[in-house]
Amino acid sequence: MAPSSTFQFSILLCLLLVSFLGVEGVLPPSCNRYECPTYNIKYVGKNFEIRRYNSPVWISNLAVQDPSLVGATRSGFKRLFSYIYGNNNYKKEMNMTTPVISEVSINGGNSSIVVSFYVPKVNQADPPLANGLYVQRWKTIDVAVRQFGGFVKDSNIGLQVSALNDSLTGTTWSAIVKNKYIVAQYNSPFELYNRVNEIWFFYE
Image (cartoon, rainbow, N blue to C red; front, top):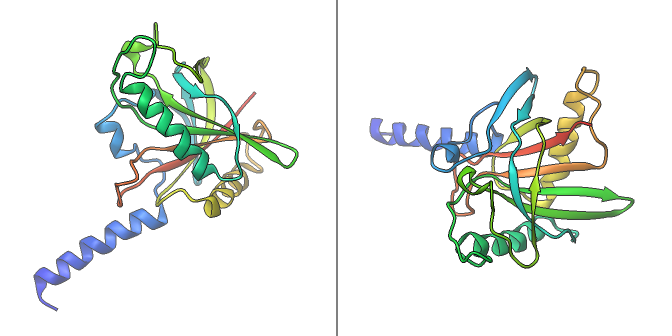
């Protein structure tokens, strides 16, 4: 194999490894292009970190019951995308931010999913309203976070949730809120490499 071909193959292999094996403790590259909610890192453990988010504001879809997180997120994001492009009561366009989060609440065998968009700081004092959407103002909050790469799929979310739970078991950070978690996605579906996703667990 020629040297140039070997170099190109090495670069491709590195990209694939990052995409499929995931990332830990990395600020998503999309946060260099789009505004992200701010946080402080309180603790870094094995395969997880504890963050304190600084009172983020979200615009959220109403909860839906859907067996597919991927399907619910896709539908919810379409409504949010329309919202940020002016389909709101102020007819105001807003800057794109990241991540889009899907909050999953489990009650018995049923799951409800709320898909939300982070409101840019410039709009947080008076965010536009819209039919079928509402504003969430979080207090300062601690979350346990696990990062992983690749595409979010219905078939891999349960594995990632279990992996974060296993990482926290036996640590001082194990007292999480049960039956609730967030899937945070930082990339558009058209970005094939260097994808960053996260599982968030809440604390009381």
